[in-house]
Amino acid sequence: MLGAQWVAQRSDPVLARAAQDLIAKITAAVPDQLRPFIAEPTVSTPPPQSSPADMLNIAQVREWIRVGRKLRIRYRDERGRASERTIWPLLIGYADAVRLLVAWCELRQEFRHFRADRIVDATFLDEPHDVRRRTLMARWKQHMKQSRGIDLPE
Image 1: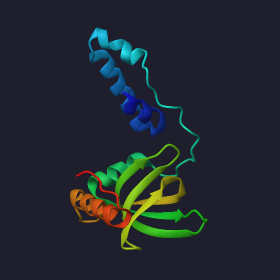
Image 2: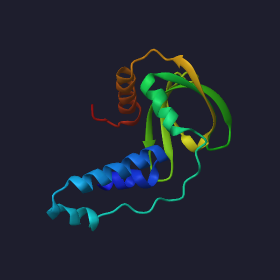
Image 3: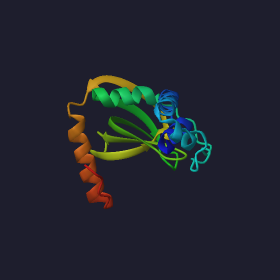
């Protein structure tokens, strides 16, 4: 429930609606004696912090991840420097104030993490990247372990 509440408050409209539907289904399905735990929970998520607006259609990015297609983005880093890149989107990460797009970057020839609010323009290319998502995910996890010492679960 806690995770569904968090998603309902912080994600894009499509995921937020799915989380709200999930909460309603759980509420309807639990036995009567458990309903107070949902109606009057003892834990909750804090209200979301104000976050910068994304210029990116996150729902379409999720679709491009599923079908294995490339994106061309214009990106501004933390210093305001602009770059244009073709990326292979892999994963969307949700933090309190920002969304991160994990992707293979053709320009840098490595995995990069792009803040969605710093992507100023995106073109959804009808060009596959020809690497299965499972393989790309395994490579990213290995990258995270080697470069940052983070051992992600399989």
